[in-house]
Each structure stands twice: as structure tokens, then as C-alpha cells.
Length: 323
Image 1 (cartoon, rainbow, N blue to C red):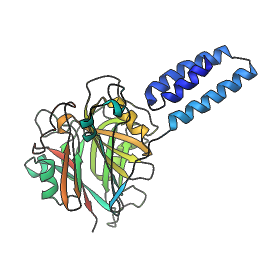
Image 2: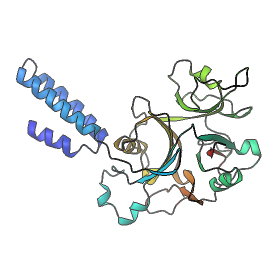
Image 3: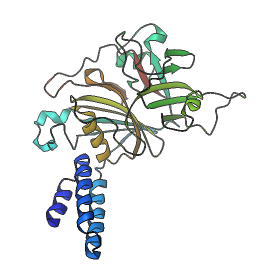
Image 4: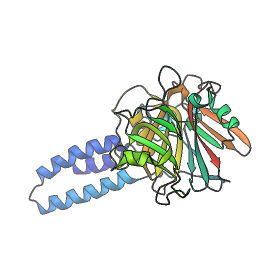
């Protein structure tokens, strides 16, 4: 049985969620079975180390530097909603993978654009063109009035939604407020993703002009916080990595949020907190690449047409090169 377990663990190392669940159960059994046995304890440690190596195996992402501080990459999901490998999917499915943007806040300014502030909603491409954005992504999901964010949303003195929603555990903050001397607090990150569980998070929110509240998909410790199951759909998220860079991520291939998160953890991205911002055909990502604007929109399923890139979005987060 021990050989079977070891082979099974390494052969299934790409599916981290199932591996963790399986490993937890198997190690509990082995710990009880081998309790008090020196050879059993040694075997247990070897198995644990081997499994940990399998879990931590990451797929490299190949980045393209578009300009200093802005990197672009694409990749196909390693795990799909049907637990199939990419090779088993139709060839056309390779057009619907992950799009990654990695942004250095030291070189780019993050901006928030809201229909409630300017009086009209625009498509993602129109928001970008109207405000000179290099990149843009959904800021948050919104209520049935097609304007109000589901969570707290503020841009300086304009408040789209004043309510801090109890179930939404992530806050993107940007543009630290100037102090009494007109200077920004050097101790504050230029852009950050705070968690509701953080110490004095409410005080931190007041130190920034831009605050966007959303669901946490993955905690800073790497825990996937979304329930398993549900309908597979395209997903857009904003994440922070261990170097303090901010990532805009869209996966057009429909996945459940848990499988989406498993894929993020499969790639060598060094992410901390991941914030879910939109799903389905309205999830989108804009990039001004090599002088040509490109907008990717989500899909409802693999067989459906992409979302409408001309559809108006009420709230988007943008990026501009600092002057």
C-alpha cells in the first residue's frame, strides 16, 4: 500500500486541492498505524517530505516586459472544472486561458473610475480611452441598480457605497492620503490588499483615497476561502504578490472559483491575498499593448461566445504610467 500511496501522490501532484484532502486522511491513518515504530516514523517523515515537494511543485509563467514596471503573460489552466488535463480539451479551448498583468506600484498609478462619480457607465475599452489608462479591470461586482458596488467603494471624497459589507473580507487600497505637510506617509504601501482580519484594518482604510471592498478568494496564508462546487464561469481577480506588486488576472475558460484558485497556486506567482472582482461574461481585462488596445472579456461556458466588449461597466480600476 505504501508504494501505491507514494506513486499516487506524485502522479496527482498537479491537483493540489484533492492531494491535500487525500494526504490529510492518509497521514492520519499511517500515524496511528505506525505509532511507536521507528521505521514507521521514518517512513512517515519521508512520505510527508515527498508529498510536500509534490504539493509545492509550480509551473513557471513566462513574463513579457511591456515597459518598465508592467509585465504580461498568458497560460492555460493546469486543472479544469472537469478535472481534465489541458491536452484532453478541444484545441479551440487553448484560446480561453489565463491572462496575467503584473504591475509595479512604484512606476504606475492606480485609479478608480465610477459611473456614480462621472454620471455615465462606459465599456472597459471606453473607460481606458477616456482616462488614458494603460490597463484596466473590473473594480467590483455591483447591485441591481447597475451602479452601486456590492461593498464599500470610495474614491477620495466620492463614495459609491458607504457600507462595509460583513461578508466581504478584502480591501484594495491605493493613493495614500497626504499628511499635514502635504507629503505621503512613507510607511504606507502605495497600493495594498488588506484583509478584514488584519489588525486595525479600519484605521488603515482611512489612510487611503481609494478603497475597494470585495470577496477574498485566497487569504494571505494561502487558504482558499470559497466553498467547493458551484457553476463554472470566467473569473477576474486582483492579487498581490510577495514583492508588493499587483496582478490583474482574468481566466476566460469557465472554472469554479476553487479550481481557479488551485490553478493560481499551481503557477509560480508567489501570491498572497487574492480578491475576486467579477465573474461571467462581464469579467474583463484591458491592456494597451504595443500601441494597440486589447480587451478580453469572460465567457459563460466554453461553447458560448465571449462577453460583449461594448457592454457598459459601472466601476473599473485603472492603471496609468506615473509622470
